[in-house]
Image (cartoon, rainbow, N blue to C red; front, side, top):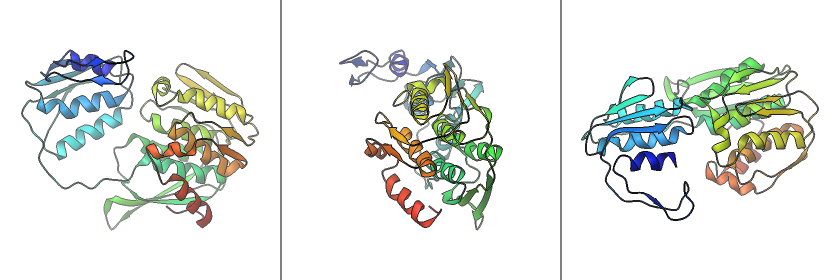
Length: 310
């Protein structure tokens, strides 16, 4: 809805053919440019999409965000890649970007770095099981917001070691291990929503409470991920408190259980990760992981059998 509103205000003629605010859509019109105002508190993907197409608008574009900004590292990744391909957005003030019309992208070679969102499950697995795991192919200086997972795990009691492959940051490796107890954290995760569930699973076996804030936009993902955390952990024996923008996970004894991820790939992978340490956990509709990580279950078995490298 917010993205359609922004595009229609800039020359689009987009109509809903079913329920208002949802696909399917009939898309027509010409992107005129000018000032485009969009709510930045729901999803960075709206902003990224507008930034990417703005060079092809009929006139210069200024993207203005209202309502605050969530997942801002993803916007930085977008503008960084645009610059690599020849377009330079100008951030004139917080929440405002200007893009010149006519600055077309140019071909270039680009190495896609490893995904910290996907890597977070293996880091969390090491934390939960009290083991060690090494993930290769990660940029140790990445702009990805989910790189924050490493700082959070350090704070909770894990050891994190980084190694660059012959000076190439794009192909480094990161090892996470834990030998002592885990402690809870109090942390704002508005910039890294895709690892909130991962951190929640690690928090489930910590010896003190964990409070995670800045999470209201998790309710607008493939499912209500705040509700998924609460329902899943409570079914496994923990006490969890959730408000609009925060969740508190209290220490306790975690037992097995049956998890219905509501076809949400991240919910399925996170509870599988917790199951690696708890045991007796069944994940329904496991094929939903194919949205972002089709090989997840194969890698899961391999990591489990080999003891920690992927």
